[in-house]
Image 1 (cartoon, rainbow, N blue to C red):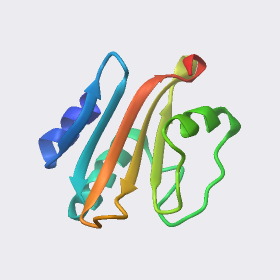
Image 2 (cartoon, rainbow, N blue to C red; image 1 turned 135 degrees about the vertical axis):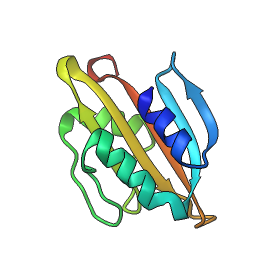
Image 3 (tube, one colour; image 1 turned 120 degrees about the vertical axis):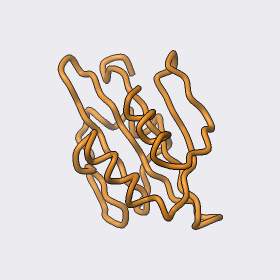
Image 4 (cartoon, rainbow, N blue to C red; image 1 turned 45 degrees about the vertical axis):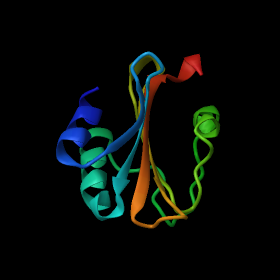
Length: 115
């Protein structure tokens, strides 16, 4: 996926999981790169529908997806770009509570109707 390759090219990323078959990527980036990461995500997916530090109510059709990734807490961000035919790409940014110098990035794609 082009978004993931762009992130890996521009940032130092510790890849934890990457599977085209499962349509999922998970990696860890440094907190100091969070601004650049957010810029890449905004350019590809648009503004986040859930910004870090703010409460959000998600549209009902996203509830299953949000649940599958473990929910979204107040300190986390969530981006999603929905396309035709229920296609989607999402990205979630999860700051670490145990080490504030690291952030987990989760990216997934597929069809909402197949969740």
